[in-house]
Length: 184
Image (cartoon, helix red, strand yellow):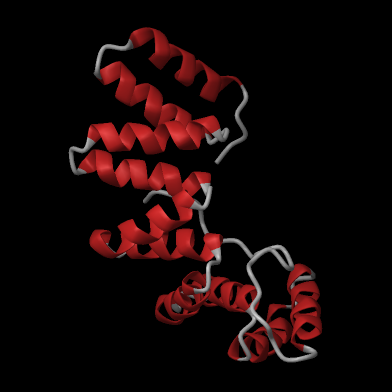
């Protein structure tokens, strides 16, 4: 399956609409508990904050549900966050849908996350498009991911170029991926 497993958001990384007073503090407290491994204590605070519109709380609650194997609730929370512009939620929702074989539903979430600059989503969209035989658009997304330092994007771009006989550029990307791009 493409992509990485979901991880909790960093406090305050998603777009935050106006939330009631105290909700940001509740999210911060939940996030600190989560970072300490006290997930069962963090969950109700995330849930309350999420229900009051806190986008990062929605995302993190989705991550907790996913870790527990509750993909239905994870999908619901990530969709809520994604619809409000949370890029990581868009990517993770795409990964979840892709893993369930729901490729038509995964594609727009990958695309929206990729357009927002998420290199993992760019690579995953390239992979999905490549499997459909759309090498030209796959190359665009692989290249976009590769240029952001995404190792798998570099590898996939290199392999695509190699298959077309573009050995010099292929070697460049494959060597760059092997030489030091951070693991993805």
